[in-house]
Length: 313
Length: 275
Image (cartoon, chains in turn cyan, blue):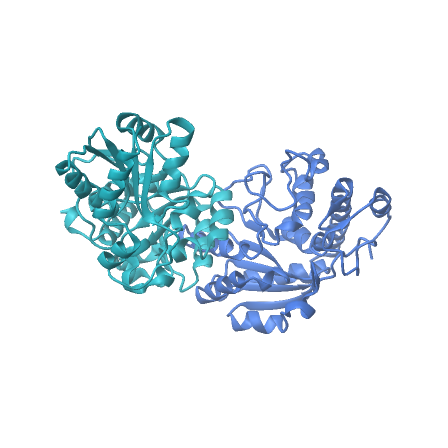
């Protein structure tokens, strides 16, 4: 079963599957094939697998050059190195050049755990969504990742995938109708909408259950594609519930909170609360410890939802 | 190379140089220094060695040419328009609002440009990606990459060179325009590259060191490069920044300079050889 797998196992298995059907699928790593789970691809499809060594900027440029030959390169490394370390290469050699390179940043935010502050990217989606035409996607669980890979490969766009590489909490079953760019309503509600992404989706669902016991009906919407963002889903949810909470394992500045706010202020402003990283650098620790310290737990979502509801006119 | 071919290429370079001076001159300001220094090498690549067809600019089997020192765009545009990739009348639109000829090379704006460049240090990585893809596709094409010497101060160039050497990409022909000057002054005064041939040899390149204004030497070096199958190629072009434009040659501040009508018309009307 897909949902028994780690996200990186799904990533690798889908790459192998895609490469069997399409000779243009190529995989690049910068000395993290073991960490990112693509070792099997290197073993099974060695001629399409390129480990460039610890040189991320070059990896992005090499991927761009391959894309000019019609290749569909997937280049992965830890999220901070996949984004902020080679930002100009991504902006110019990939996006400005209109080359559909797929950049995969693993272990986002608190998921970097004991790799600590140097490896803990809270700004990766923010800087990537600032690049013109860049598609920014954060899968929720293994089922979604499995369904997303083909769409990512063939969307014809430079794309950033923010990938928690280990075992994600199961949210979806095989009946999931996944479309890149289309938000998913997981649970309907009428008092407040919880917009969530990545590891925060499971927490938002749990928060909605706690809120229900306090008499608050919360709608839960998974915004997996931060760009292009599903404006219609955001506006209709805000209209239906009159208040929103954005839940992200990322800085609220230029993160999903900003992206949702941009849509709301232009279309249908409602009280909004943000559960995300607020002006903090990361540090070593387990996910649960860091989530509590940085204020992104289920309980933080419950508190924020109550506050959002109380702010309604 | 036969004398007839050499004199024809020499004449072609003279004409391309004039076209480039006029193109930049008509706009009034531009990267004249690094455009002038690379004229002979580009003439040799486009008119002597590269397998290209202006009628099929996106042909799969064509050689790729990357101007990594992207600010030398006008040198490339002079050649592309001469070869018929686009109409020569476009040359007068250089850097004008809405132009398809920007100062730095852009693959999505200009027919015949194989890779966007301008943010220095990125072209060689793209060239390596192309060389790897070509090998994967069993496409016999060669990938030419023109690097600047100032540009070589970018760390990415050395990340890339390490990989090219490690992967033995013999279909990669890198030409280094060693004109010894960068925007702020002499390369060796600012952050020196020498001994540059030793550096590239140490990175497992097949290195040749030539007079970058001698078409015969450049052509021979490219022939030698194509004849060996063991290593990626580096051809160090010893050049003079501003070469052949009397108002720029030997002027340390010629990286980008203002050019009056009188200045460029005098050059364009010159008879005979530049030197």
